[in-house]
Image (cartoon, rainbow, N blue to C red; front, side):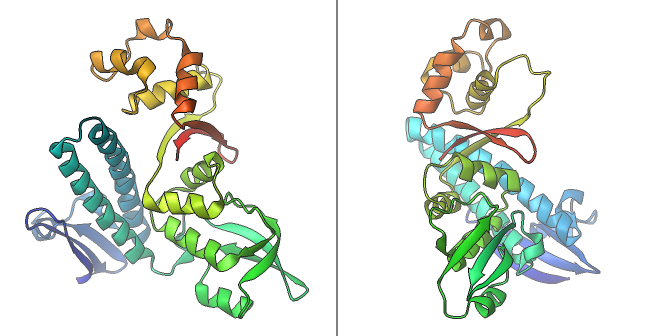
Length: 290
């Protein structure tokens, strides 16, 4: 067994280990997990791709929990919520570090890759970002800004002359966060900021993101009503529903849903910074707040 990464949890004396078990088999967990006579839990070991998927899925759960703790902390400034935030932040750091370690420079493992056509020295080149930095440097030489003739990605390009190296680095760092393609596209689509500013907020974790699912005719509620209900059900309660939500143990009684002024509720959501966006590639709707 070869230890690839070892990180302290920051609380107690615990630590997590990422290891290459040999024969293209990887695993992660605590020292106790590795010493167990039963072996590692099945969801913490497997091929490189399987372990990356496990780590990324766990990281997504951490982000959702962290969003909840942050909202609760803003309400009460309780030391208990602060401690939970610190624990969740450290676990998220470990998970994302393990993802980056396993991915290394493998751009094929990137969750988001976008193609663009650039004009360089009178010739057209089609490249993908993120890509290996050495290949990009070889193509660009000393040039910083290049002319983009065609761009299919979600990252807003406001001027045809852009710093491709910066865009490439942004996408490499965003992919290292363990976000899925639909999540990244939704965040960029919902943002009113520049591509660089949006990438900075994503990398700092300064966003909330909720998936509503595919658009189907079987839904009995409108999209705005579905979005508002999702926001409230995810502990991002807004004033119009806060009392009903909290008084009923985190759920809105079915008998009350039909009597709620959903237009008013959605207006409050919008004022609070929420936006409803659709991923045209998958037909999935998201509500985002950056």
